[in-house]
Image (cartoon, each protein chain N blue to C red):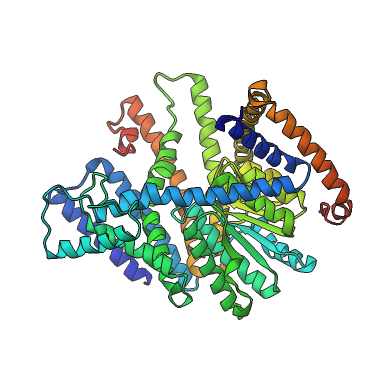
Length: 287
Length: 281
């Protein structure tokens, strides 16, 4: 889709909505109009920048130290002749962090395939096991090493949170991996895992968007991808224009949000002073 | 004498101490506790998922219990004929006359049944690609469902929370608080701006943002540590209770026995300790 088509589609949706609105907008919940605009603006911004990136327009991203360490960690494992342990979190594929974790696993698996380093991925959910296996299998095939792939690389432990933590700890103590990746959604087991990894002297790289667990990873790991750095990681690692365009689109959305915050403060001030009759807080309340 | 409660207390104490023994180093007690924990929990959750999700919510909607005297058409008879076959194989999960969970027949649940069967079929390497359909459904459904919730709570909710009142019935302290929150939100957002180098004035904004993030992480860390301490106190309270005469001093006896056995084990594994010790970073 080029820019002309994009604006044509965007304008078409807008005109169709205006006509629908003028015709009485049956079935439309007016109190949720802000959500409609939010979804339209967010989607349109991301699609616009993805298209730009796909056309080959250069989008530069600032370096993130934790991402540079991925290859270093796998390389260290190779030099030491020890395996790489990858923990994709403890929740199912219906959480965006797990999806991001499985995508990053694909990149790590490509590195382990290149370096011929053993990879161990214990999982806590059956669907994650299938998804992770597919991701690793594809990575090994893409690197031309399907012979090195075996299904037991990705194996199920248990659904239970602390039993899973105990199992992963056991793997760490016995196999002594030289690199441990924690990429996904974690809860209270995060510090147990990270401290054990630290005690065996592994280089540890964590990535999560769980705010309550980031402090534990920051304390015990060598590198931590916090919040959106973790979601941007797959774009950085793959250098895929579509993903990089998405990151740029999200950046623009952040600038828009800052602008909307300032505008909303001014609108509230004017409303409180009685200069206008528009309650921004009520407008932003989704019912 | 030894009631089920006392036996349970002894097992609880043994497993607690076995897990605590990991503080010394990886040892046979920890390995036993770990394997029991992993194995029992895996079996427990598999059973729980079947009896709380699959049986009542899936089978209960596909083959609900028939009312007395309820007549079925030809298709219905064929459908319940399939059920009767399952009933012959495993009656506890497929009781006579259908699954009585109060649901009506909802054939839309054939979709999750088919997706589930496709996941199971992936045990045959020839059909392993079938599993992708189920994964694609879960990921796509979750992405659509959650995007609305995230936009509402994480974006619009945050914008709403940042609209500080500047006039009216508001104290100076609340205004200062609001301004700090606003600065934290904006600088935090700018820290996560990836398509511009964090240099010059922009770098300074990002640095302020990371300070705010670190302060919030520190507070979160302290809060979580307090929670963990209360969990630890809970375990010690149990150990103290089970150490009483009512439980034949389970904590004391098991602690002594484990310390002695660990000492003997450690003595005979000196060499292993030296060769498999912690690798310095």
